[in-house]
Image (cartoon, rainbow, N blue to C red; front, top):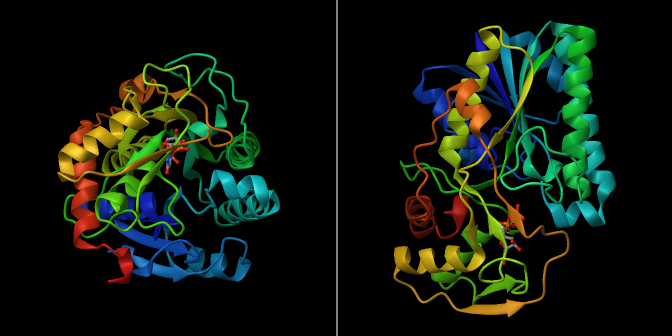
Length: 328
Ligand code: UDP
């Protein structure tokens, strides 16, 4: 029995592969290595290829006995999705359609899907729960919502059971220091702050100081990437145990402002971290905080690495030891 991880060379995918290996699972990774890093795949059999390439999927499914899929492979930059939406619909939505059709052909009936808080758009309530309105404010979030819905219709018609996990802000790195975050270009707050601490950037640009929050900067819910990885394994277990299809939020339930993240990083690193205050970034909601009560209750998820200091310290260990990411 093997678990197929699409996008297993990416940030969250590679941490999930690591967690699966720690459990002794047989792992197959499919990644086109456009964003992912070969060196990030610490275990399993790697197929370098694209979801939209039927020949590659045929090889993956015929050469391995796949019991369940964890599907990460997708483009995930909000800004880029607003400029080149076609790329997102093609790779994310059409790519997922190709995967679902092959699952059907080969009789694979379980899929854990990497979704996002961007499916909600501007929240109606804080914290956000899974019954709240989904109205994405960017093309990326819309593709993820479309993928969730498409997977749902494959359940209705073909009994493919799915768990969609809507992540809030993934951060941190594996405790071993072997893998971590390396996006090119980097757009996420925590790695940008740590690159500034390393002197790789002159400063951190803070996007907006006039939000309706206590210190005027945006509030986000940061969750350790290894806690996210654990949730995927619990979701696979639930599906293989016969669970019905479901959607779960994954977050800490605690919000930190951009200024608080920078202050915490200053304490953890002992570095000054210069800041420049700038205009708001398009499409940023003021506050995004998850209610993950449902994942805790139904999956038994218990995120344990939930102190902001510890999340940043784990990322700092990675950035200090690998200042050029996987290029070292
Ligand atoms: N942010 C910032 N400067 C940066 C990158 C991000 O002020 O260089 C802010 C961004 O506007 C948002 C928060 O940090 O309010 C988290 O952004 P990130 O891109 O990490 O995640 P998102 O919440 O957009 O998924």
